[in-house]
Image (cartoon, rainbow, N blue to C red; front, top):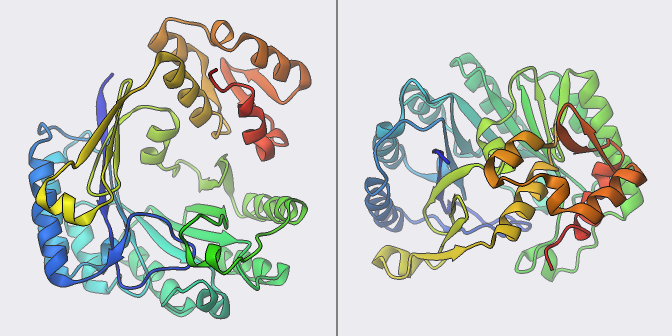
Length: 365
C-alpha cells in the first residue's frame, strides 16, 4: 500500500499544560537546534516524493524561533508537490506571531491547527495555558487575513471549574470566527499529567453525554458536520491527514514519540530525548498479526461517521469483514448498534457515544 502521509513531531513547549501526556520538553534554543539537526537526518532517509498530507505537530511547533521554523520548513520542501493536498502546522496563540504565520504561508502551509481549548481566561489558567482568549482570536483573524482558508481550532470541555454556561459561551464565540474545522475533546485524565496527580474528577457520563449533545447540536446549526467522534468540519474541510489515520492508511512519523505504520508494521520512536539526539535505539519495530491489523483498521474506521469501507477492507485483506468478525458483527447488527449503509459498516449517532464498549466484543483473542 502506498505511503503518502508524513507526520513530524516537535516536542518543545514554553510551558507544560496540566492535562498533556504527549512527548514534550521545555523549550531551550540550543536543545531545539540539536533536535532539528537530528530530525534533518531522519527526513533525509525518507525517499523524496510528494506527500498527499504533511502534519507538523507537538508539543508546540510555533515555540520554535523564526529561524528554527524556517530551517525546518526548508527540510520539508522536498516532500511538497502537486499531489500535496494538505500541509498542517500546529500553533499556540502565545507564540504564533504574525511573522511566523507569514513564514508558514510562504512555505506552502495551507492549514493551521490552533490550540485554543477554551475562550474563558479563568479556565485557561486552571489548565496551565499561558495565552488569553483575545490572543487566540487575534491569531485566528490574522491567519484569515493572510489568506489561510483552512483554519482548525482545538477545543476542550469537562475542564476543572467549567460550568455549562462556560461551554455555551465558547460555542457562541466560535460562531463569530472565520474557522472551518473544530476538534472538540472531552478532557481525559492520563497518568503522568498534573491533573491526574491532583485527583481531578472528570465529568460523570450523563453530563458528558449532555454536553457532547449540546456541542453536536450547536455546531450543526453553525454549518459544521460531525465526521468523527470528536471532529467537525464545514463543507469539504475535513482533516485529510487525520483521515489517513482513521482509514488505517500508511503513514510515516519522525521525531521522538512519533509512530509510523507501513502495512502490518508499526515503528515506534523512543520518547527519550537524549537517546534520540545520539541516534541510539531511535525506533522499535513491531509486526502486527493479521488479526491485530484488521481489528485496528475496524477500530479506527468506526470512529468516523462514514464508518469502515467494506470494499476497501476486502481489497486489503482478501477477507470479508463478516468472515473475520462473524459473531460480534452479527450481534451488534441485530442490536442496532452497527448498521451497513452504502457498503460501509458504521455506528449510529446514538451508538457512537459508546463505541469503546462495542469494540470490546471485536478484540482478537
